Length: 108
Image (cartoon, rainbow, N blue to C red; front, top):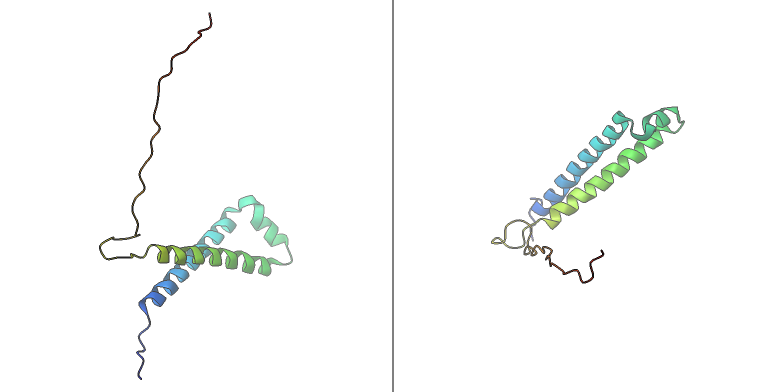
């Protein structure tokens, strides 16, 4: 039995989206450091554990964004060729119904 060496398209899509999410996470973590949000950069530079802080920050941003982007890519896969992107039907929009009421005892 001979197996093909061609990787599965779904696996390639997952890896690509996961890597893209890591890149977005790294960019957001760098943005937090550049903008010095909450004086976090100043605290990091004064700390003895600067490298551990950087590893935890960039790693957690990368894992979170990578997981979200990969999960979103899976959820938006079409379930049927006729449905297009993101299967399912649209929910109806519920609007408020206004009703006029009479005032029984007006204050004088």
